[in-house]
Amino acid sequence: MPDGHPTKNEQELLHIFQVVQAEKVRNHDVQGYAEMFTEDAIWCPLGGEERRGPAEIAVGVAAVLKGVDIDPVMTPIRYEVHEDLGYVFGHGLLTIKPQDGKPTIVAHSRELWVFHHVRGAWKIRHMMWNADPATPAAR
Image (cartoon, rainbow, N blue to C red; front, side, top):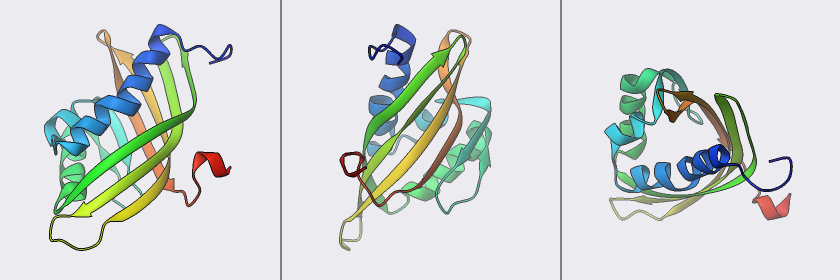
């Protein structure tokens, strides 16, 4: 990101951050979501139990999605790639609709995803997020 124009590798990370993950969440694709992670990945959801590896992450994301539909909109703030490692730091706007008809919740998050390029593909090695009451424009 030094010159403001994403490299090919940075574009791939941004695509995973903004498009791929969101599609898997919207479609309740738990297995596909888990496949985005490396075998030694660590997933640290806000207020949730830390999970390690795709199998545990699948259990965790299934619990998060149980009884709700989530529409995540991810906005990258900073991103970089150095050889086979990269990261995206950004803001999440999550519209959470309970399937039982209760009121919709809108949540904001600050997220840091660390990527590793393994066997020809970018995979998430660490995903951590915190609540963020402000939108990127308000900062």
